[in-house]
Image: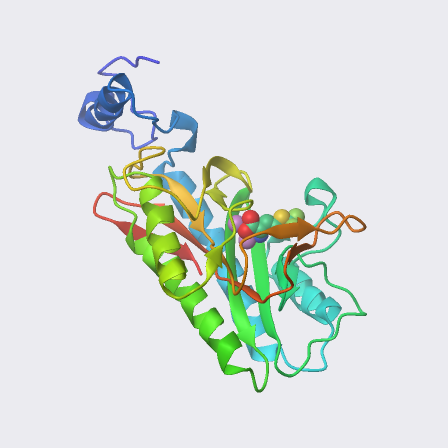
Amino acid sequence: MTIDRNAPCWCGSGKKYKKCHLDFDEKIKAYELKGYEVPPREIIKTPADIEGMKKAAIVNNGVLDLVGEKICAGMSTEEINTLVHEYTIAHGGIPAPLNYQGYPKSVCVSINNVVCHGIPSEETIIQDGDIVNVDVTTIVDGYYADASRMFMIGQVSQEAERLVRVAKECMEIGIEAIKPWGFLGDIGAAVEEHARKNGYSIVVDLGGHGIGKQFHEEPFVPHVGERGEGMLLVPGMTLTVEPMVNEGNYEVCFDEEDGWTVYTEDDSLSAQWEKTILITETGVEVIAY
Ligand code: MF3
Ligand code: CO
Ligand code: CO
């Protein structure tokens, strides 16, 4: 699409296009002409979009802080669901998981060998020694924020503790690998290298994603890959980095009965941390954590 140089910029800044995003768009076009995969305009956030996502993130971060205060052995994962649901609604948000593609609850709670998408239940009781991922996504005024943290319950084995720590490092190293005008593959390469160095594997069947006015937008963010490959990363893109790190094999299986729960195929432990980030002119800004 070509815009009149003197027309207002598409980003809503009120500036003329030629004084705002014209050079930016031309730079992207140049990459495209050289054969690189480039981000479509729809996934580049305007200042108003970023403000909206930050509002959603405030509620989302508050939910995870609350879960961190309350989570303990003896609690059912249904109780976590109630906490998340009520806090979110009370703060003007909507829990994004609820009814998302038929998902029945307001949060995902994934324990030990559950990789992700664990469905809260009164029957699932959090035990001493468990490692628990709580994955929270909040919608405020149509904008999404998505993050997850691990919680170690009571006395956790040294092996489990190391997995949780390395999984967090994998996420952080993945985020540090993001550079404006770098490539999507830079993230996965860094994450995979760190996991492998520590004797762990990275899940490839699920990954991070673009996010904004939708839960899951382009691009899919692999946590394995090659530097310099995949989509060009530019300022204004918002992504999640959320590597799932397995103690054993990278392979996973999906629960056929509930249609959601993802397990490690070999029943080994799995850990995951997730943040929503914004790519800026100079690097990365964390939005939801
Ligand atoms: N929050 C997950 C993610 O990080 C997605 C959960 S989908 C749900 O992408 F339906 F299970 F909630
Ligand atoms: Co999530
Ligand atoms: Co996500």
